[in-house]
Length: 160
Image 1 (cartoon, rainbow, N blue to C red):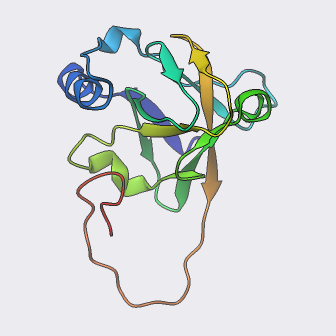
Image 2: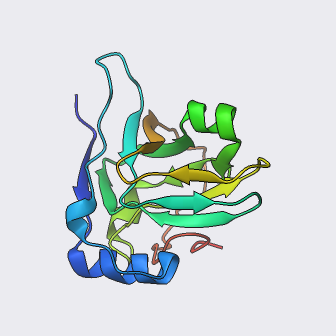
């Protein structure tokens, strides 16, 4: 059963976001679609589109170049790869990334941008093509509530 599909954002969106977050325009050709490492893997590995250097205390927002079309009732949760956390104290600045199904239609094309933080005491250099986070799809359920009619427009903090 398939509940989602990874896609690349447009070249123009990727250039805008990489210029804004990294100070340079990158090519969408450097983006790889996430994939599982083994048939038993729950997580889809995301690959770095460029080299990243994280000094102790640094936070870097990494434009992944990826968007994900997700069926209603499911969410994509983003976690750091355990080896980065264990070996180097690299974590997500927001602890866990939550990619809702309506994010696909956000103003930025649903571009998944990952905020990494170096909580360790050494400089960490990650290379283009390295697997750096993993995404896991989960089903969620709703509580009895009023009708929600708000429409998403952006990414980090867009729903206040």
